[in-house]
Length: 240
Ligand code: GLP
Image (tube, rainbow, N blue to C red; front, side):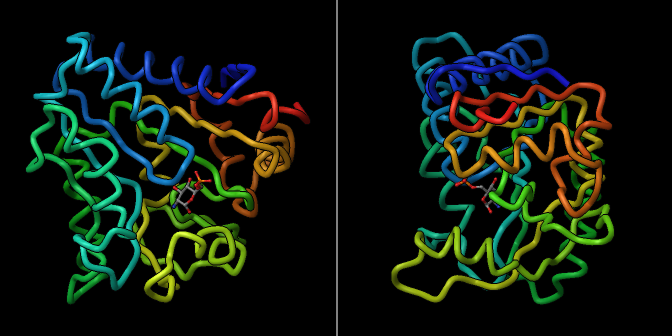
């Protein structure tokens, strides 16, 4: 695991975005795993900038998103589908038909999870997965738990996640369930980038990097992966 510390979140985001560009330059038809939340937003701004400057093209890229809320329309501004379109996909030359995200409105959610997992495998697996981290150490929506949920699955969100994320929901109650790629779906990615900023993440970063490797701190499991880059700013890295 590589830890890359920058004074600011902008510095971290710039370095992380360059790592993503490198991946796409080396393999034009890369399969990228995207994350939502505030953590990767600056990375996406840099990717848009580099695309506009002609440094990189996403024409042949396939995308898979980590997670989506259950019971929310793709067109709703709080859906992760909308987030990705708004913050990245509609600003670059990626083929929107190759941008995959779990359908939180599927009639059969279990089947949706299975289909999603199969779709990742048939695309050849994820080359590079981008991750944020929750204040409780969650990755995707893999919440702290006694056991690992390996594959894409439905999850009941913890109170701490609801408390952290409900600020984004003004016109509706925040969903209490989500579909998320599992820990093994994430660990199967060939390369992983985790980005964290701000003092709220400092404890989770410290425990994930130096504490016990346990599903009670989901991000700690990343230490078992051979190619992970963790980008932290000074605040998120203050205990490491
Ligand atoms: C959500 C997402 C995660 C994300 C986390 C942190 O719960 N499902 O993928 O990493 O929030 O969000 P933020 O980056 O806004 O702190």
